[in-house]
Length: 264
Image (cartoon, rainbow, N blue to C red; front, side, top):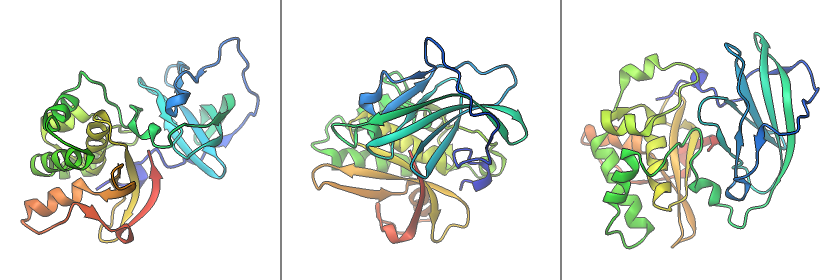
């Protein structure tokens, strides 16, 4: 599945060497998408210098590499967030380049789980999104959309065992690569499923943590069904493997089988 030590989204051992905040006329932290539950980072990293953004709310912290696509979710509900841009100094030591406190109040708490972000990155021009629209064209409700996309993924995407042992730290899924190559690791499956469902207006979380019968760190999804006002657990990676082995499985999983550590 997904090796825990390769998941850069878990908080790294970061030591802030300087608490000095760089105040500039224009902030590198863009809040123009705040009503959608997103912030963007416009900071350009120095050459060969690892640069990260840390987003915290209370005791919960999420850390991301700053790369080409830098929109990040504020997915922990309404309230006060602290956003920090961190620049590597040496080893695990980082200095704070900029810091800002942001108050979030969304009209709909699920809005953030419909957006494109660094991890669940999608737009209307992508093959995967065109496929999602094709698959759900005749769907009468969200449940039918979920079933159509779920069936497509578990029947057409295979688990990539070679990638599972060779994937590098900092890896971010490409949903079109997963779709077109028809293979991926659990991170790829869950990013593809989340992006496809979000694109057809079904709020979906990409979740990381543990499954009770899988030794490795794992990724799956939680999907919101508005007709029943509930979040359901769906694990396309697990079900694709079960179907390949011709074993029976059900789309909706029990929360008792999973331990959530991160959600995006």
